[in-house]
Length: 342
Length: 291
Image (cartoon, rainbow over all chains, first blue to last red):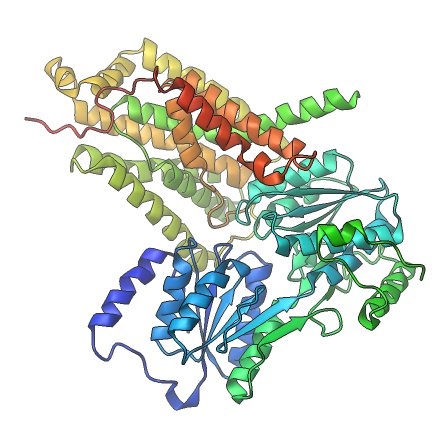
């Protein structure tokens, strides 16, 4: 069953208890059931996006691999190392750190617990007992940008990110490059909320972007995205592009598509390796080709996303998978990106 | 419309939106602190208000009923602080901090219990634009009302007396402990409206950590506003203005990190500039124990 610790103080209280009481450590992988632990970042479960996608991967491992899963949520950055240490002490077979924010803590804890296996999503930690899982978000974002440029009526689209860091700039650069590929005259506005857990800020900033003329906003900002979706629901003739999980159903018809990042697939694949005791990958990179990123099936927006547009997207997708198009993942790369004649 | 004018109007409109939850929380803080109880639990009170309002609105189908429940919840949480501060005589900072942690954790637990999903609630019936505007207007009316109560009514005088010198107030026949208790509870009810505004007027859901430190910004507004209702309101508008400004100017050639720090830099400069002239109520934060 899932034990969800909400706050660091809870787990803090657990550590000395377990250290003091003999026999406190639970049964070692009882009857061969793989035990998989997961530590979420401060964004936490319920974002219907990044963390929830990771959680879905764990749930899949529970059903298909008969694993036993546990999620510890982190209230602050100070909880990361504590939560991971708790799981390491409890002899979990695989410990997931969900999010680049935990890279340093994974490195520290994995170096101390060399007999435990760790995995980190969205960052690369170069240790023998750590599997790094990263995604080519820029590739999926490129398709999202292309679709937005094909769909905008105001010739203005926008990207709303969480924190202005290299990881989020991959989304930004890919989105802008995809738009440029379709129509260089389409203006791409860019703003950042500054956090991943403030939905009000997401609502206010998406409002600013719509007011500045954008009619499609691509939001990659964790729970701040919930506010942006609410903003779009209250306006007519505007769209949101969701992120990480398939968010299309959260506001049917208002969410043009979602750039799905299969964090669940990444988590599940690492779990498979853990269960099969295969040689573990050091670094899994999941892009369009690997099915790690992509757009949804436009279930609610078929009237806008015409077969002609879908055909263009399919062409771009093929070009990316074959390597004809190399999608920029940084602002510098975006600056020198020129559209290809296709 | 002239684009510059439109831009200015957009910033001013957003200033009101950003300032409203701060105004409510800061007014609650002013009332509490003028009676002598430092209320560091404003964040927790906002959380209680935001969460309860969403749950009750979802159950009753009425955002108004939800809002009332949110206000009651805020008053309830404040009553815990008031009890600890007046009857138990505990350190008010510690009690307030405890409330913040407890409220956040209780709401997180409540989400799992009620919605069977961690992290965020489902969407519930919320106030529309008209309701949001009413709550914005009400914030300013509340500031005016609190000003009148504090400066023109006997009870307001009692509150201020308890904040300056509870022993002298008791000597004059005022029940200092009861006055403080009432002030903190009413302050909690007002501050909870800040949370209600966030969850039911701006948004239509509760998500963990959605108050995002606004209770602490409101505390700064209390100090910056020199413990007066109008001062705190002005301070909240000041913070709201810089937040709105950074939204509009972001990426206009200035690094976004710098722009995002703007409201806090402005607060720092303002507090440092005013530091020499502010004076807290003399007995603010000092537990009163009857001899």
